[in-house]
Every structure is written in C-alpha cells, then in structure tokens.
Image (cartoon, rainbow over all chains, first blue to last red; front, side):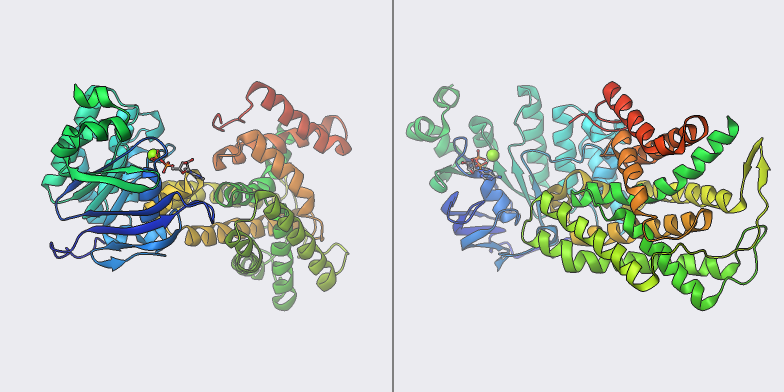
Length: 251
Length: 296
Ligand SMILES: Nc1ncnc2c1ncn2[C@@H]1O[C@H](COP(=O)(O)OP(=O)(O)O)[C@@H](O)[C@H]1O
Ligand SMILES: [Mg+2]
C-alpha cells in the first residue's frame, strides 16, 4: 500500500506560501513554507497558538488551504481527501485523540495497516512489538486504558503500520515525564535510522532541537527562523522571542 | 413469571433489531434518526409487496407461512437497505456536505419519517394487513407458551446479534465502523474511507430494520405506524444501554421488552411505555451514562 520509494533529490514534503484556516477569511497560516528532505528530522517550534498544529492538519487535508501549495514527492496534494494521504507515503500522528481508545492496541495497529495484505499486516504488527516491546503485553487491552506514554507509542506504531516515507508527529512529548520523552525521542531516531523522514512539531524545544537536523520557528502563521538544530539552540533571540523557554534553552 | 419473561424477550426482539440501526447511525453519523421506526415499516411493506406477487404457499414446520416469505424477507432486507442509501444520498449527505448542524439532521429525519409513512399509506392504505393466515398452534417451552412465529423472531434476532458481534470484532469493515464512531477524523487519517463506512451503516441499519418489520408483521400485523410505535421503546433502549455502545442498546432493548411485558401482565397495557420510561429514569439515576455507556 505504501507509495514507491521517491527520488531522494526531491523533498518528501514541500509546503510553499501556505495560507489556511478553519473558517473563511480568518487565516491561521499566513504564507508558511517548509521542506523535509530525504532522511531528515525537521522540527517545527513556536509558541502556543502559532499555527503548528494547523500546519500539519493542513498537510493532512483536515484544514482547507486557501492558497499556496503542498507537495509530496514533488506532486501537489491540495484537495486530496484525508483518507488518501497514507497512500502517498505520509503518516500523521495528531496532537490529541491520536489513538482509538475503545479499540484494543492490536486493533489500533491493524487499522493503521489497512489496505495491505493480511500477511503483511501480521508481519508489521510483529515489527511494531519489536520496536515497542511494552505494547506486546497490552495487545488485547483497550488503548484508552494505557498510560500517556504507552498511548503515544500506540499512536506512533499505528502511523508506522502504513510503511510511510514521512512521519508527521504533533507534540509527541506533550504530557509525558522527562524519562518518557527521552524514550520516545530515542524511538524517533531508531525510526529515522530505518529510512523514515520525520516532521516533528514540538513545544519541548530543547529536546526537539537535540535530535533534529533542521528546525523552523513558526510565529503568527509564518516561519520566522530556519536553521540547523545546533544554530537554533545557540541563538539567544530565538529562545527569547519565540520559544518562550529561554532558561530551558540556556540550561 | 416464565410466561412474562418469554413475552418480554419476544417484545425485545423487535426493539433489538431496530435499535441496532438507530445506535449505529447515531454513533457514526452523529444524529438520532427519528425515521428509524419508519424504516422498519417500509421493510415490512416491501416484503408484503413481494408476498403479494409471489404468494406465501405452504407452511414450514408449524410456522404460519411458506418458503416464499423467507425469500421476501431476504429481498426486503436488501431493498430496504438500498432505500435508506438512496435517502442518505439525496438528503442527509447533502446536509453533511453543507456542514449542517445536528438539529438540521434531526429535523430532516423527521421529514423522512413522515414521507415514508405517507408513502406507505398512499401505496398500501391504512388498513392492517397480514402476510399469511395459516393456523399456528402455540408451542410450550419450559412452561411458557410461544407461537412458532414468535420463537422464530427470537431465534433470528439472536443470530443477528451474534453475527453483528462477529462483524464488529472480526472484520476490517466492522473495526473501521467502531473507529469512525469513536473518532472520525483519526479514522480518515488512518486511511478509512468514512463515506464508505456511512453507506454500510445505512445498509446494515435499514437491513436489520426490515427484518424487524417482517418479524413484527408476522407476530402481530403490518400497518403504516407499526414502526413509529417502536420508536419510543428504541430510544429508551438506546439511552438506557448507553448511547455510545451498540451492545448497550441490545441490553437496553431486553430490559425495556421485559419491563413492558411485566406491565402488560400485572398492571395494564396502556402503562407499557410509561413504565419503560420509568425504568430508563431509574437506571439513569444510578448510572447517568447508561448500562454500558462511557462517562462523557
Ligand atoms: N478547530 C479550530 N477551529 C478554529 N480555530 C482553531 C481551531 N484549532 C486551532 N484554532 C486556532 O488556530 C490558531 C493556531 O492553533 P494551533 O495550530 O493549534 O497552534 P499550535 O499548535 O501552534 O499551538 C489558534 O489561534 C487557535 O485558536
Ligand atoms: Mg498544537
């Protein structure tokens, strides 16, 4: 079911001058642009309400784009029905409500692998249990009964079931303990190591910048800074102006 | 007492078959369809039309009808599903595309209810009708007397509930339905075609309603308001069982059916629905989210 492996010189995802919002005439994104290249982890940072979630929702087709373009592997996906996104090789883990709480862990994974042959789905599920050993123990349990960290793992595993080339994660560290955040981010590095590019939306700037290749700082619906993780970490005005976490960045 | 229980289970059968559709539509399309009762009636009348053409020759093992009625039941199930699909395409879907509010959808379902009932009157008249008149001696089972037709209703309903459970827990489409009913946008993100799930919801909901209609017609009679009269008990069953759970709705239907039978036996038939609602209120006082419902 996953799309053919794209050429590595075309960005996996390219968003250009995107204007998008929930209601007509109230744009939340006001000309946002970003790019994710093959094998990259790209962080999107910014204060609360900057439009980070709106950006990934627009890519997923959950928020209508008014102008600009969204290219996946060089082809525009504007107007694509949300349920067809996985077919382009892009998987998305929303910020909230990212698991089916009434379905078992295994059912969540099965639905993530929808459309593939059943034998492949079995194989992928086994792969997910190898990546997230905790989940195997809870396979029959309703996902709503898991802890926040375990749920986040179900959500990521569910998204990976579709064998995406690009994984979009909206604040995977929200509400997790520092130890859990470290574990989740460690998993992201493992996932990238098997060839999946990652677009990582985060509030936790320090943790995100530590693992990303490049990052964007979004504010008021546009990207205001772009740079390598190291540069953004080192830049004091970015910390002060847009991350709202000067002390965390400096420490 | 055994007899009351048996009568209650028979009464519950028709509610069960109707409420499954009501509950699925509520959870997947996010509105209570006030036309669900009339979908029961259209199913009964479609079967009646087929029987009028094909006859009900013969009698199977003590039942009041012959094999043609079984064929009519199956055809009515499919045709009633397709009718609901047509209504969805031409009415509810148009409203969904315009992001209509839930109250608009509810009002539309009132309209559909009236339209279906009047269509029936127009085509078949007000008078009660019957599928067949063959004599069926009542059976005695464990001290309760039950007609073969009513026994068939209980058996078919049980089979349908088991089939529904297997469908929801084992098949991809069934799991997709549960996914859409919990979180439609995440379902889309997962690659589930929500429109397809909605189509199947109508097919299944109205299909089961047709089975309810035919079985109720065999048990009592076929008349234009036969389904509308089941609407209140169906709503009671869905609410008492917990609106988020199809299984809850089935349990709720059993409870309402038995409560109605108790009222008919020990109090008076006129208080049937009042007592059913008393049961609803008592259960909700103890458990506001219903028997199997989830806390909001
Ligand atoms: N469903 C929605 N309907 C209308 N406005 C929304 C919705 N979700 C978010 N917004 C608004 O869009 C803006 C950006 O929100 P969001 O993209 O969630 O920000 P972030 O993820 O960066 O915190 C905020 O002003 C917020 O109020
Ligand atoms: Mg957000």
